[in-house]
Length: 162
Image 1 (cartoon, rainbow, N blue to C red):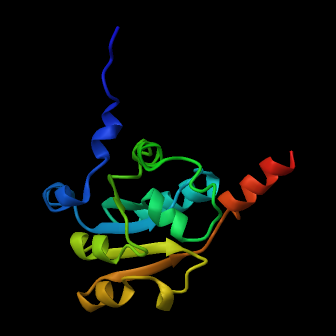
Image 2 (spheres, rainbow, N blue to C red; image 1 turned 120 degrees about the vertical axis):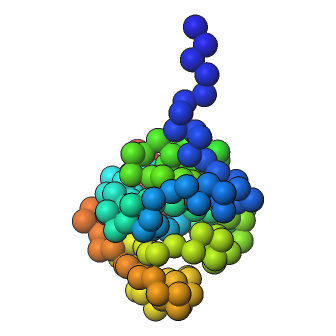
């Protein structure tokens, strides 16, 4: 029996199609970004909190080459972009997943023009890429405090020790 592609994969969107896909999403629109290499409890809690700030959540994932430039280690990302996007898209709180190749998500933020920009609590608002732009068009920026202190880097270190 061939069941075809899972429906959540329809939430994966190339950057060129963002405008069309965002046009049909309910507002207010929340935007966040990250590597999301090995999804853990900290990620999913944070994403659910970000989604609660609006009616739709757009997640922009760093492309594989973008992750490599972040200096997280030569073996990163562990999971390829397509896999990371599929896992993110499977989350109920996520409305749409896209990606960016640049060092920052600024172009995707400009493409999406979110009402709210969110990042994890390790990012002070004045350091969040796109904060000036989002505030400039009347939006809000949130640095969401961590409830669960988790880290993909720490998880990988633990796995290596075992």
